[in-house]
Image (cartoon, rainbow, N blue to C red; front, top):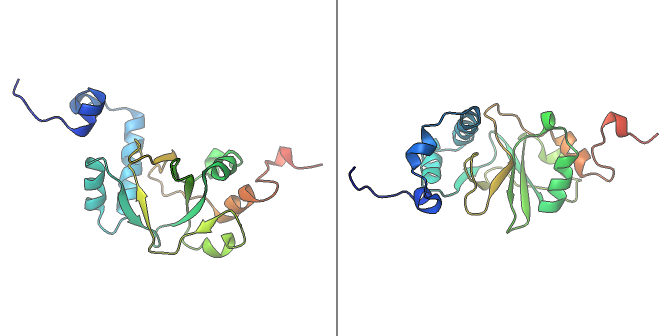
Length: 174
């Protein structure tokens, strides 16, 4: 076998990249669909994919596909627990910065303006994203993009961050 250079992932894990890439699984297909959707949200999808190949974050500007609603990490995790899985869109987190970013529809800024613990970043603000299948630079997807384009509805997110949270019908106060 000829001697070849190892990728950063091979050096870190000790596993050949070839083994990781040739084992198709439903999870891997889900990651590929999420990565494809996320890259297509970038002005230059090829540059986003290239950043991920280098195990770096890809700066993807918000605006045309989604906005990023930013919260503190713990508050974001509490809100995430109040939202049923079928109503969750992608949520990116960075524990070192104590931040979570929710991908919300482009028209969500007005509805979330009164939610004190959420700051909707203006259109054009880059969100530095890892690929959906692994973490990069400390960031990872707590709720991954799945390729469908599903986002967290702003009303659902506002209710989850509200005083009583987003209660399920059976949990409503009586």
